[in-house]
Amino acid sequence: MKHVLLPFLMLFAAPFSSAAQKHVYDDLLVLYVDEEYEKCIAKADRYTEKDDTRRDPLPYLYKSMCYFEMSKLEKYTSQHEYRFADRDALKYAALYRKKDKKKEHFDRFEDYWTELNTHAMRNGIAHYQPGEFSTARRVFDRMVVYMPGNAGAWRLRALCQERMNLKRDATESRKKFDEAYAAIADPAKLPTDQRRLLRQALIMDAEHLLATGRSAEAKEVMALGEDSFMGNAEFKALFEELN
Image 1: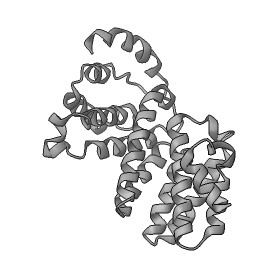
Image 2: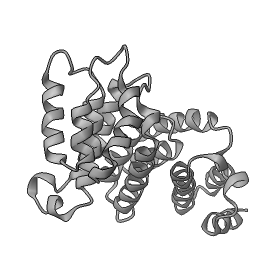
Image 3: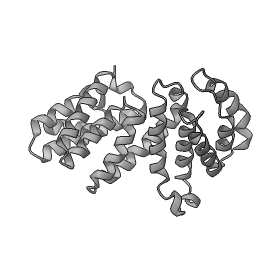
């Protein structure tokens, strides 16, 4: 990976300089690109502890990206310290977003958010299906923090909360879903990861409503995706069953 370091630096280093953030964090960038993930995390930790840099968002983002890459490698996940590296990736993504409320850096990392969303969706659903609703909810909790406009994550968060009998929380999450969904001009044109998550969220929510005798509500949920997801066989089959 070292041979791509120079163009990577040229692409990303300049935009990181901003009035709001004093440090450029080239040192973290170099460590990340060189796959020195543990060193990058340790150095980022020091930045988050210093008075003049602890409010900067990028050290938290680098920690998230490092943990995510480590979660793919058995040499790390086999260690007790890093066995939940994927969870830490979500944790620090959420902490990053709390520091970057105005999205100064967010859009420059579009590929990362796509990959993280895809992994988180699979992980959250994998925990939901066997009834691990609390664990699944924690995944969606963090997804809606680092990407508040991700409508599918809000819907699945609400579903987990309902399954946990957290009715008030589920109601609030559904309101957030409504807001996020209303802001989508065309669900069919969402990024692939968000579109897939939204479609799956509608299917899973409708299936739960149908299983609990609320077929009219299930029909309403599926109607939200009628214009966008009928090309998907699973969505179409459930939609036709309800209609």
